Length: 296
Image (cartoon, rainbow, N blue to C red):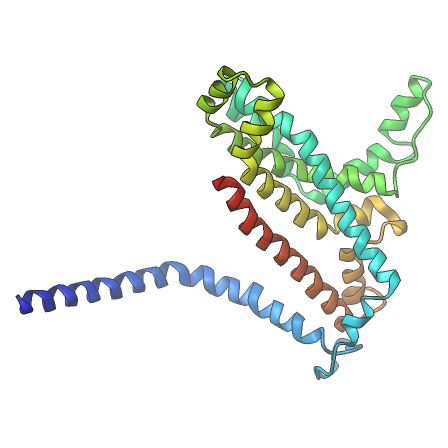
């Protein structure tokens, strides 16, 4: 009996070792890729953030928190605040516009057309975001397509280019497909039996929506909103091309510190570290409260 137990333990140990080795072989390429292109650069940025006024070619000698204290300057706080508000406004716009589209495709459109409709909706993602931003420049400029149409109908023209409104339009257009895709995936799994049960118990359409539909798809709403918010927070192309000098964001500010005339890598690294921290906190809240809400 003892021999059989020992043999069984050896077999389990051998299988465990084989499983570990197989898992290592499968995960090693992605792990090395992440280590080289994510972990190590992030650690370098964190180290540079403690070096005041460092420029290309200078010796890296971390000395203190001067770069982080500089962030509390009202000018830079205003830039960070504007970036957060732009990302938040973009998220709200995408949610308001994307939810009806996702709901219609998932619950009302004929099944044979759903995949085609989703494909048509995400078709703009097949082109570069830079090209999409230039397309909006063509539409929104003073002599562009939008003002030409308004002029033909004897309506007042709109001065949208190089403004916050243009940035919101461009960001919302670029990020709306992501919102629709994730919401569609959640709505497609919606349990119809719960909706029917709520209706049988006397709930009206509004009550069914808020008390049955939303709780079921809340993890999808949270995930889609977080994806749009994080992507919007780090967007550089749309504020740069559509916003002009008046729409400075944290991404543009970081770009100026590394590649612009300022050339202050330490301060740019501190700003990057703060943004990484904010995004990490947001993801942590999503993991904690999104799952808890979904379980309820």
